[in-house]
Image (cartoon, rainbow, N blue to C red):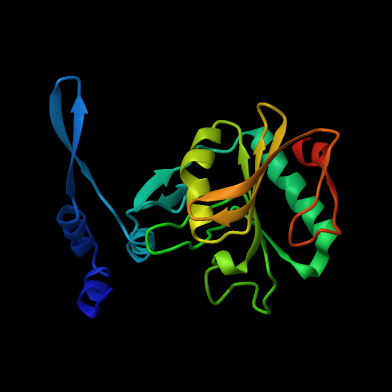
Length: 218
């Protein structure tokens, strides 16, 4: 982004004007009629600035996907429990060899910053206080799906693959499945597994560390 754009991004009024300027007419068909809808596309920098000036409230749970601000549903008890289990299991198993980041952003590119439920990060001395975590820092991403399975698989997963996240696990709590995706190639993963309770799984980055699928799913 150039200097003028950076300066304008600091002013709330300029942000609103920029939102209007960035409106793109996207034709869509409804039956025999063609209608026009507007789609606003934001950069990660603009997204954060909107939070700083109060356009996005601190209490709102959001993530930036394909330049769109996505509001996440409040987590239910099963979702919270699954995140707590994964956090505990990975921390106990791997200790200071990793940083287990819970529901924090992962900067993929200029227009994508999802907020996975768990990111198993490579450790750095300041615990990512000076910069945002990126795919090169991530050994594993875990998404917990209760109502978000389709979105996690069809929307977020291709972005993780495209940006080089080496492994993604999706905990499908409704079907008691652990979906494992490995070997990113383009916008997909060449290897996928569906594991059930009673089976075991090891992260690619830590093959000597074995988890019981049932312990993860609860």
